[in-house]
Image (cartoon, rainbow, N blue to C red; front, side, top):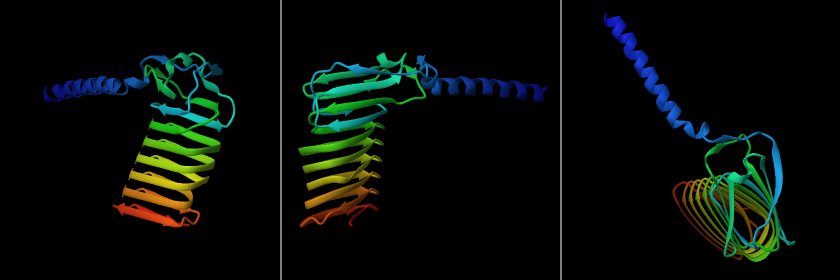
Length: 223
């Protein structure tokens, strides 16, 4: 009798666990599934020079030519990607009621770019940048790789995101990292950096002014 009760109890527990697991992982089961057939569309958007993203997308940015925005994603999920321009800021978000094996991909050509904010895990590759000031903020695990020239560079990393700016010739750099994010930057005249956490900063170039502060296990070093 006790053995039968034990078997029944175990079966009930397994059923409850299965229901809880289905509910926990429901994000991957709810909504429309991606077809796997990629399609590229050109978006008709107002002009912008700032980008904020709150999803997981891959961005390739070309700076210096007339604006053009291409989006590549599953053909049946393109409408789930939300793009709005407010002021001069392109805001990118998603309707989470879908699942796909692919990241949506943006290829953007833009005359100028002043600011990028990443909330989530989006990755940016910025090519041939030229400008007076570039500011970026990474919250989460997103990464930025950039090359070109800029006078003033400001970076803020909260989380585990990385910034690779070794090929961005910057005159003045200010950077603050809170968390485990890493940054490689080039500074020709001045550098002001601080770390609280385990992040690392590597400074290329030979800036005359060099100020650094760290708290935790993070490090700032010159190359």
